[in-house]
Length: 306
Ligand code: AMP
Ligand code: FES
Ligand code: ZN
Image 1: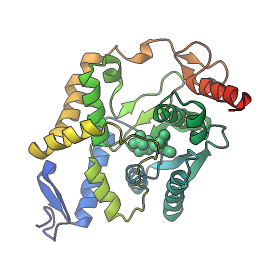
Image 2: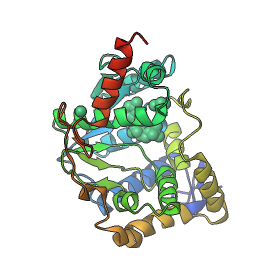
Image 3: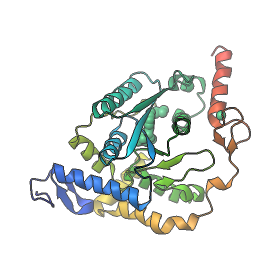
């Protein structure tokens, strides 16, 4: 197989784009897709300071490196969840990656914040740990971005994550989630702007990029998760993509261009969001925000000697 661009030996074949590339031309293809994803939805500019949430996985480390190479002003943020073995490994690859590429990194330790995930799981056994953990992570993403004056918070969500979420929202016709879904969620009411610059690229395409760029990453699933998020839907879409190459991107792009407008005005922001009475984080519930309530529940359990 030959590279579509330079006719050298191809190392990556992409059915969805009906093309194969050598390593150098694949890097350029990846860059172009990221640049198109940013420009077409005006995600951020080179003047803005972007905080990139780095889990230690290939997606977030890959987009961090690509944004740096494109001349964006990026800083990494890693949330150390305090889970034995896996958190130290994820933090280690993230720290080594940032040191190797001369990238600034902020680390927030949940142990120091009084919210180590193993303890949260032990003390709040009736609540699904992944959803509590997700809430805590999003809280620290937003807090750190606002405290340190960043203009945007970027995550490593890719096309597979986004199409699986879109499919799930569609199956439930969840108009509020459909109204908010997309690569750009503008800043509003105490929330920093959120962006997903990898939205045009699949997990396979990002994995190839990370491999060819020699990015060492942490790929073991979280020991507490029951399997990857949306794994059934991802499998379904994967089979569809094999039969109809390019369908995933067309599905998502079509939604952004033609479907999403049907849900305008249905967004959850319509409800009154106000600052948490203790920490100021925006919340739709009366009084305390979700994380302050988790903190109180844990304190109560600790106080009772649990
Ligand atoms: P996930 O929900 O685990 O697939 O992660 C989605 C995105 O959230 C990743 O690509 C990262 O940008 C971000 N993320 C997840 N976990 C962490 C973490 N512990 N610290 C920083 N960012 C994270
Ligand atoms: Fe949060 Fe697993 S429970 S990453
Ligand atoms: Zn609060």
